[in-house]
Length: 310
Length: 249
Image (cartoon, rainbow over all chains, first blue to last red; front, side, top):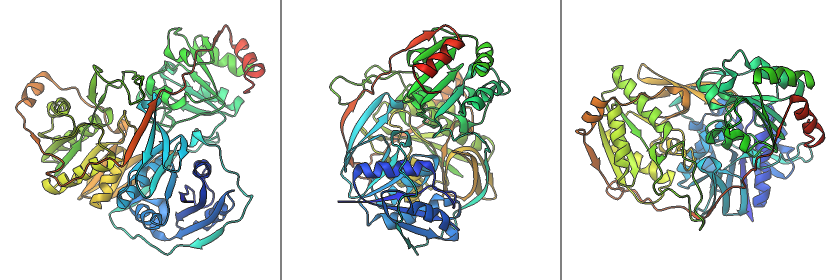
């Protein structure tokens, strides 16, 4: 039976949604599931992890060295603990993508990035070429290090069970990297990667100020706001709003693409959405080829109309 | 300071690849190939550091078939001083590439390695982090800003919720994100000059690196294609369809 270690992403108090999806992927592998919560002052997050359905043990590494979860400290910890497991999993977020390959190299094993399906405990499906192909890969390594595309798995329930919490004393002190600051966007809207509805703007928005038109519709729908790479490159909006191969991968119930032509790399980030709506004045835009509902219209007319109709 | 930049030869970003009908991979014969876009940003960043007087030499390395020398020439035309080709056929996994780069870091006495955050073909996003682990260097991944400061490097990183800034000792590894810089185009005189710059060939075996695969690709399949839906005539019709037909609002 597999012994699976899931690395939790947390803010010292709560467990991020991506980790809950990762636990679901761990269940698909099958076996005993443990969760590592590493941080500084993160006991509350460990308590939260202990309540995730399907988790039998929580490892708590609470030390100053793990503040901000820098990969230079986290990877040696994961490599040390990982030796006792057959699988180590983390969400394929900017956090998991940062420390997991570092841990894999320390263990001298390959990493299997961004899995969307578990075929068997050693065989997984992952998208390549911006999702234009799905590769089924088999690992020959004794420990499988895996990042999980969270949109491919539902979130494990929380609060239904109480797993034991075990303290972990291993401390990987390092003096090569230090945290300076962080500038996080503050938004009352749902998180882009877990929102049920996402509305995104592209180059057709013409400038950043016009995104207020999307915001008004988003407010009516309780939606998150995204953007195409073109809109980010043009400086309309910050990069953390980018949906696409090189940005965030989303799969909401409803995705509304406004003024987005539908480049390959954008489609890679949203084509698994349940329902896609495209609003674009160019009837030939490739986005219409993947849209369930297309509206050929000037977005500056259509968005206020949409806001009024909701 | 000596900078090593790794570049990967990939299918051009604008080519829509098709899966081979026998499920062994994707069809790449005759496809237009290019430097991976993130690697181009890495080359640009290194050259800017050299132009600013912070670096003495920029070395570009590529692991792959002989044809990678085309992409190395492009890097030289952009301003890299010399190239290294490590020949390899078929897919070389990120861990093996990281081991090759580690050997070159030691051999060349490198102070800073800059690589792209991911390649647009295999989408792994691993090499920089693995290299940093093998060398025990700090890592500044998904960098959108990098500033050399008193023998250290301050890196601002693109993270899910916004940006994070870290301070790293040198030597270090950076992986580039899109907003780090806008790569220049090679000028004709520089393309001509690049033809005279050296490209050395070193085998993985000579570097003492085993590049055997750890993963076996069993099959490659096309994803389920979405088909185009319907065109609605008005916003009112769209809202009605979303409410009554799709039932998503």
